[in-house]
Image (cartoon, rainbow, N blue to C red):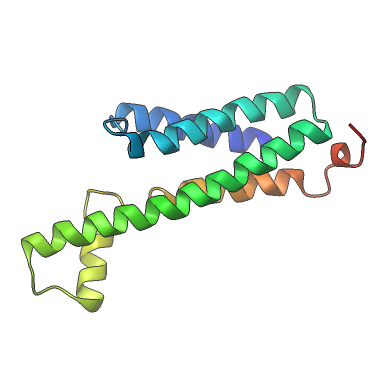
Length: 134
């Protein structure tokens, strides 16, 4: 069930990013590339749950977490810049809420990659396939 949820969420991220046109520059391709690697590694683990595929999957899930954290940071910086252009006097709590509530860039959206990465890692926790030898 955990692998299925991780795969469904990853497919949803890919679809969302493609529909939003999140591929206009090289930085925007990073989450799409990581998500595509996620789909490939999910397929590999689903068909051959052995140490090699599981370790690769774990690495990709760590990449999901890193990509999500970096995405939240970059979206936050973009949101702060945009809000300060509108109202240079904004700061502190007021700036934070304006950035989080703004429609673009969606500050918390990249956080779903962190959640999916953690979900994928939970799938591998004490996985019997990791006890085998390659």
